Amino acid sequence: MSRRRHPKPAPGPTAAPGAEGAFTLIELLVVFAIIAVLASLLLPAIARAKEKAKVAKVHAELYGIGVALHMYADDHAGRIPPVRENCNNDLREHWCQLPVELAQTRYLPHSDAGGREANLEDPFDPGHTYKYAAPGPLLLNGEPAGDYALWVPTNFPNLKSDSGRFYSKPADSPVRWVLWSLGPRPNSPRSQSSHAPMSELTWYKGSGSDGVIVRFANRDGVQFKSP
Image (cartoon, rainbow, N blue to C red; front, top):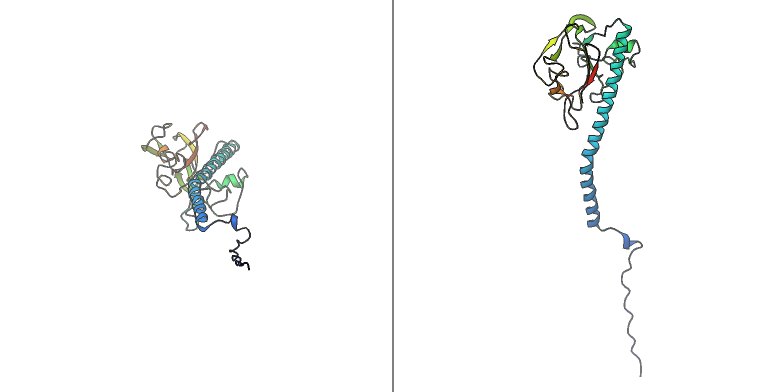
């Protein structure tokens, strides 16, 4: 009696090496979606941290410039540098630049860049120095042009006001000088306000806001700063 031989079953498809650990397309799409969600949550926090770091840098550098102004005044019979304005096309945007005198006498680092002789750049306004103003002499295009008038709230030292007046004589003004950064949004209405930088209503109030970052000295030389 003969035995019937059953044919051997055909071998099934073999998996490619390492196939057991591979991701499917759907799994990859899910991973990408999760990464995108996490990135959308983290990016604002990173932006706030970077802004906060820049603000800290501004406060530190304004403090250093204030010290330089104090030293300059001590060495020049109490006088402080004049304010500079320009109407020339190439320098018009460099209004109220940091005093050239502080750079020329090495109280601040020097540069040969027009409108930025004092080589301290506002991190929120690239290509420009911090701003400086003081009641007293004004130079227009490098030539004497009367006095610069600084707006100060009438209820100084309370600065939370839009009511004030312009002081052009140092002896009359409660503020000796003021330094400021235009802040994270330099072209905003608050940063460009005619009452900036001395009205607290124009000051930067924290992450996400606009406004100027300020340091000033009263007529006795005592320095104050915005938050």
